[in-house]
Image (cartoon, rainbow, N blue to C red):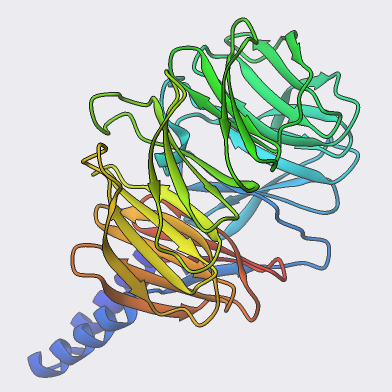
Length: 386
């Protein structure tokens, strides 16, 4: 039952029964205590496989399924409202299609557009309207599974596939037409947009590559001593060089901050005792890393001339940290390979709540508006928490 209905029922019941004030206070305190981490609903089916869940406008989310379909869920009513059919093989990736092309996607938890894109093992890309469930456009050209999708700062769509190519697509404003305007002979498992017509990619080798998304020209190669695992674009509100810095993590247990304009390594983040599995940057400029050493570390990166200082070590997981997401101002959520998700107050380092979100590991976390959270387990159980 939606939260607003629960509140109405409770209010009517209290008033109608004229419960004494002390009892009302006890009931309200118990209700408030129970509000933290309330499980709104969950869904799982034998056919469901969720490599991706994305937030959509109007209190909706989209999930992919092993039966080649995409499901649109209404969180207000906890119901599935559309099943999008069109792909002929398993869906491998989904991404939002933000109407604000220069918004850094690493910090967006609120969807900006009703349109989203999906890529599949059937080698096609589809654009969907989440409001009525219609397929707006089908893009073909890749000869292998689609691995990554992103909207670039120039408004084009970038796609990477296992055919060792990155394709650039010009999409009409109404998403009814699209054409491939560039093909780059390079593998990409990670593809992120940067401002000033740049993009950064990696195929889990020892390099991250910065390219011009208009000319396809390689501008910088960011070399690492070990395989690159994560890339996070620093938000536009960070520092003087807005949106031009990225954080990468590698299997050498370190993270690195780079200037993508000059290709310069600015500093090295060292302190974890095992490889880093998750990274994110908060709008206040704090860098957050999660590791197989069971800790989440918070780093002050405001003085980029020196190596970042670790200001918090958040301990609570019993196995490695698999995912990190920013839930609100000063609030962070981490998910672990122990199946537990923890909510942290960054200012104090206090664990506000710890919940067993899965019998197995937390595979994905998605932040939603109004301090809600989606967790995806290793057994493909999707849970929405308030």
